[in-house]
Image 1: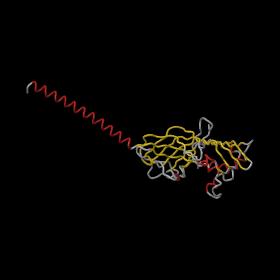
Image 2 (image 1 turned 120 degrees about the vertical axis):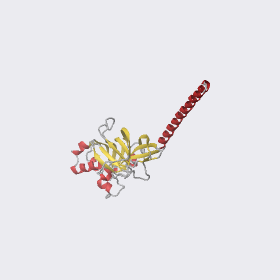
Image 3 (image 1 turned 90 degrees about the horizontal axis):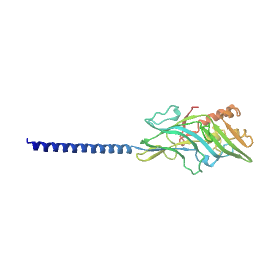
Image 4 (image 1 turned 60 degrees about the horizontal axis):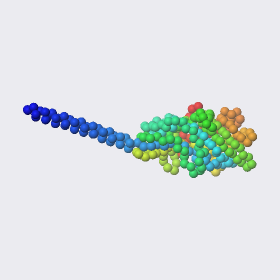
Length: 283
């Protein structure tokens, strides 16, 4: 082989290797982009809402005839976690939720459930991006005492007006206890918790405050009104037009039976729509 031929061959080899190298880099970049596209296509958004239902926003009449309107109804929530479970979680089992997939919304959120009118949408607490697609058919969260604001020291704080005949009271009731709620799939007019690739899903934490006061529009012998206290036990504590109590003070002012009933009812506040929760007292 002549010297000139060798030089020419070497040049072609270097050029060929350069082409191969460039082709490999481009192929690697393409593969990475395809992988990212696939990952993006298998995730979506999941929003979390809190709902005190229409009667909290518009007012209602208790089982014993008191018209209650809420100025504010604060709950403080943390540890909100959504799960994909198979089989579906049964809150009546009393067990912990075990999920194949779980995602958590970090932070502590104090929400005024009385915000808005009867047509208002549930309150959006937060949205998680890039969560795995699928059906989030279970949810858990904690209610804990707030560390600031008007509900400081309370996991639930009610600021309301109660009226009956010529009686009208300001009502301020606080709950110091913390609770952990665990629920299965949302129960309502539509199914919730579905995250479709590239789209948004939603889960709702629902709070049933008619469990405390009852609802005159329901039969007196229905389960709701049988377990509710009504408002009379609180009205009896009125001083100068105001009822202002919390669990600590109430324990010494109402009968042991009524107090035990209140403690039991507070555990039933958390739902997902009409879906029940398992409740554990945590504080």
